[in-house]
Length: 249
Image (tube, rainbow, N blue to C red; front, top):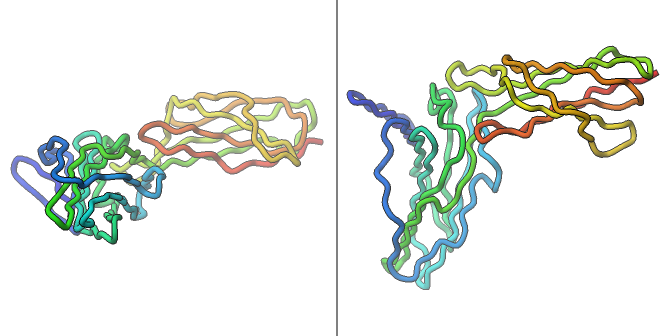
């Protein structure tokens, strides 16, 4: 279910909860008996990246141990700006419990750009004999705004030694407008892959303009592909453009 709470209203939709104004009160870590959490994995170890329209599905697995076996678990996720996600879809098999989350940006993230960034997993595990363990911040992960990056090298073809102009644009998902907007003032690497080579090499770093546009010049020397590469930020996914091949005459 989704919960957005104000002083006057509370709205609940579906099986996912997201609260930006009021998260549940924190509890201290605690345990009873020999129950222990051994490993927590979010989205298979990858960042949770969400765009402007596609529903994002991901899982959190909690591995635990107890001499009587594991009965059940509860998983909650907390992020910046009081971001909060919970789910009722958590199942345990053996020593592994899996919590499934479904996030629709147009429903669960509307007007919530501020929740992108570092998130944490709080986990509660119950054993079959009544033992339990509760751990705050059992795992950290990033929930990020999707990004995209374009490139165009011109003219094509170009004479050897002549100037090549490489343009592009860095954009990221905006959960207020559900569109991609330019991500300005970010350092972006211009990289070159020589024809026949396997690895791109960084030529220079270009700073994106306030609207996310990129522009720089280089001297053409050999055939190869040019691309821009963005390392990402805490709130925004790292991305590289496709390569633009230039034939040097």
